Image 1 (cartoon, helix red, strand yellow):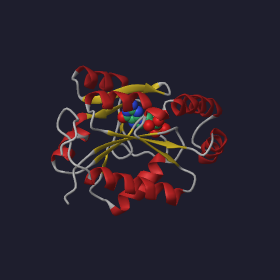
Image 2 (spheres, rainbow, N blue to C red; image 1 turned 180 degrees about the horizontal axis):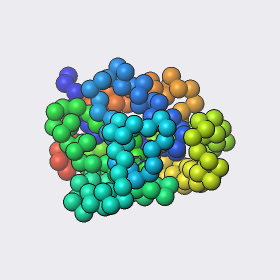
Image 3 (cartoon, protein in one colour; image 1 turned 135 degrees about the vertical axis):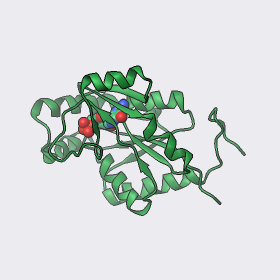
Image 4 (cartoon, rainbow, N blue to C red; image 1 turned 90 degrees about the horizontal axis):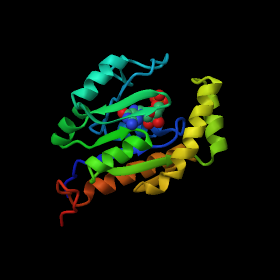
Length: 199
Ligand code: 5GP
């Protein structure tokens, strides 16, 4: 049976390990396109422009908003983040599944526009464990950690609205679940443009 290119949206609190899981899955599935978002936040030492994000000024971001260049965009942790349509549609058209790693507001905006999208929420085993991981990552100051923990609690309350939830307790198991669910949805029947299941 042939695979259908599908749109996946992956959310979860900052520091939960979404990026790590997706990079692992991609090792076996190099054609899977992980979108590069645009953002107005400042690059961190580990960031590379055009690879981790497209880093933009506020003015450049606003210009793209006015040109309707984004599939979705949102203010997250005090900055603007958005998914460019050019990061999504050309890949789906080529038959490659696309994965967006975005916040909950963005996920629900994508569901409105693309009801066939599969929304996946990655959860930490607990908020205490998330705090431990955020501190161990060492990329945020105390104020930013507190902001991210407050956002995490709010986001986790919305996780019940996602199609699938994955708890990232053991990384290997979370990677395996993500891999299996991508396979599952790609091998399901296709969806028409209104998001209705085709037999
Ligand atoms: P970070 O600054 O730690 O890389 O990301 C902060 C948050 O922004 C994460 O929750 C991430 O999911 C979210 N995010 C990253 N890119 C996008 C995007 O294109 N759109 C939306 N709505 N959220 C994004």
